[in-house]
Image 1 (tube, rainbow, N blue to C red):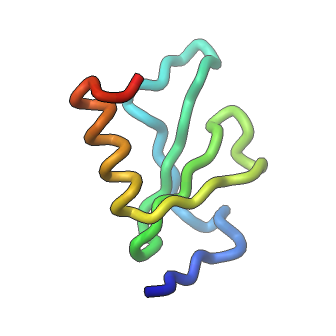
Image 2 (image 1 turned 90 degrees about the horizontal axis):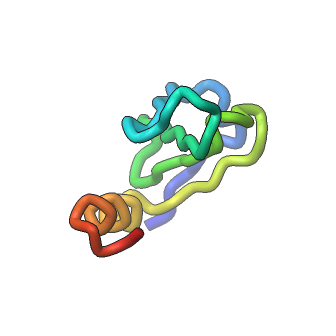
Length: 71
């Protein structure tokens, strides 16, 4: 299955990680609304590059973090 990711990700609605702090540290933002794909970017550089991950891989990553299997 092929997913079309929009070239211009600026039109997406981005949300900051709930674990991000306000001190300008390591912050991620993810965007919703792209079928089967999770775009991820550095919140300190919103005009910079974004990575895209298959939704299943992102879910496995987040599940592993929450379970303490990845750190």
